[in-house]
Image (tube, rainbow over all chains, first blue to last red; front, side, top):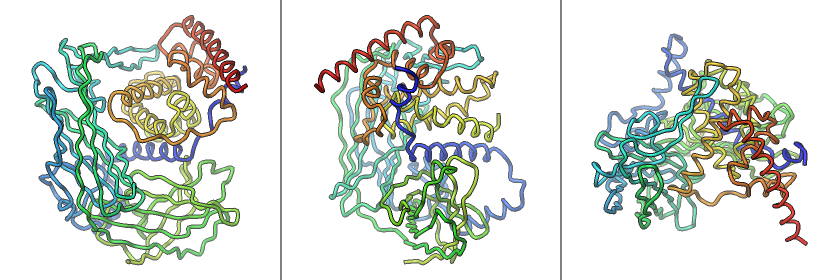
Length: 364
Length: 156
């Protein structure tokens, strides 16, 4: 076997991977932007315009579930979609409670608290926690020739046993349509409890029933992180209330500019008080200089971009030599939209745009 | 290194990031998660990299660690929904054989034969000696041949 044989053992990169990489790099660039002060007058004006459209975002709230949405601001009314004290699992070492759940018919966010019941002798550990800079935990830190280093988790610094736990959640309707919670984060509180945030959304609204099933796994671990005992799996089942709080808009392309290999067919935006869900259907022909295809951004007439979070695309068919794609992304919720908006078509993996498509906005 | 230079370098490594993560995880969704975590971690720590010419090997090491961390996470806590079928490859027998290798043998095969890293670079990424890399490559090749022969015998 030679190197070529080995290389053939790996498939070509799928489009979704390239999109996710683009999204991550943009997130990194935005993180850096946040550190800078806005000195540009244009940027300030754009920001004011966006805020006007968004309306009144909910201010400091008694609820915590939206803290995870660091890049988007839910609108007033979002707090009405939050349920509290959704369910609890407990064994002799840990109590896991879903304290808040926000469900808007298409997406769900959870605020989960895990409380150690023997905090002095058996602290909690979750793989989602950022423990590398926490002196309670031991990492084998290796410094390399280049001066950088990486840590490998080795367990407790104080020789205590600890309890490792994890929670997985699905939300399904009566037709099997599912919200996959694929975004998670964790933070440790001063009292040793661990907060988990979870977030996800489906491609379309769920049906009449939405059943949340949370499975809790936990293990008693030796100080060196080897498992000693696995506790029976816990389950929390809860039916989410049916909600219909969406405001729907159709996007009808009106631009006259023609791009030979791209055509925006139509778009839809559903706003709930929590966030927006934008679906864009387009026809596209692959080109060598765009190996990863294109992705969509929503912009106001003055060029200000409405924040878009995670996105995904599906190939839904082929027509006249074109592939028909549907891209779904979560976006900042807005109270209203102007009469026209612009869909900016970005080439994935490159810092260039294919075109801007002006669209008429029709409220439904 | 500013965010634009970081993005530019990552984009140049795009295919490598995919191949390395796929070779370890074999699920597109998992590869996306590992890649995202690796990039964020690398960006947070990029100032710790004194010799910027080692960016590629440094990033590859972080990616491999994230892949391993994800495997541990999957086995320990949150199970994932059923993975989509893995994308097709031109050499599925070899692909399956590589997937059957244990991680300590799989990673050197990926880095040396698929990514073209030298034995020295592979050793640096894996944090082992060069002689250990060579020994693992020999064992891995032997295992691969056995695995491929076994599969061929089952097909007959």
